[in-house]
Image (tube, rainbow, N blue to C red; front, top):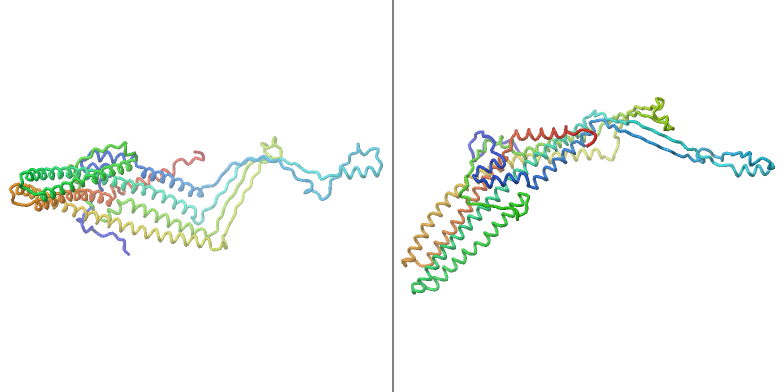
Length: 487
């Protein structure tokens, strides 16, 4: 399967383009101050973004831990020990304890009995005091420790790219939710206007019914149309209020504290976005950069697993003071030191190292497939968004024409009904057609705005190679910062 980007998009002209504005800067292009403020608040308070930032700190800490083997390990140790060695360990027979003062004046037989009773195993007590430094360092002949460090640091880069992905998705969600609020408000205004028109027609039928110029069938037919229009209002109210709740969650606050003024989709401007070339889009997608970083990290993990087959050499050293008497611990004669090295070569471990190596290679193959999938998804998302933008624009234009024509037809039908030239069934059909076109136009406008947001997201949401370099620089700075032994 080829993942080489095409030379051009099918739905756009083959030319280079500058990156699009990011976040709130892009939201301002719709001409809504409230929308720009909401996106700015989401950047500060959205909890998904906050969680992603916490994962960055975790990745930086793991990079620091994985890189620790590149440095010598040095520790300060102190010991104070008092131990007793049993006499039964030092000798096979009891030690004879002559008590001359007790044995004097006793008979020879009596003295022998007393001596036997006084014989015992004498324990020995010793003190030991030590103060010194211990150090060890593994010589990284095969690059195993460096590979582990590189793998972890690339994952720290990937965590930053992941935060950017979440930020762009959050911006898109906030904008789409706001557009849905405007759509619901537009539809509610339309529904109330339709109810008003239906009530006017029903009033006309009531007057004609009183004069005998209309039948109960005519009245009932129009009353059903009015009831049907009233029935559209509660679902729209539900959509409006629930969307505001969802928008509050995106902003990291409770629904009771969020005030949305809203307005109308017709007051918004439509931002024009130039996709540029497919190769440029790939450089502007943080999800592609994240997949690439994870692939590179996994490659170092494979190298680390391979290096584990070779010998490891560790240098050890100790320097300090030792004494069995505390007052002599600081004398020059108490200095003790030792240097040494250890070599370890795995011979047979039940194929654990081989299994780890195969595991890392399989993970690399998975990461490579995922990276290719991200490339294809980036190109496919952009093509789909371009198609949606073009077709929804056509839908809006056609919808506006259909609404204008059906409104003319409705006005004419109402006039002809009063003149008795048409029946109520014809009027109901014309009313229903107008109402349907009016609602459909609102849905078309919403889809058109959503297409703009989808294209914004597909083109990387304002992300660029400059952003990538800045994120890597921040990761490197986090790695270099605070390297002291104490927090």
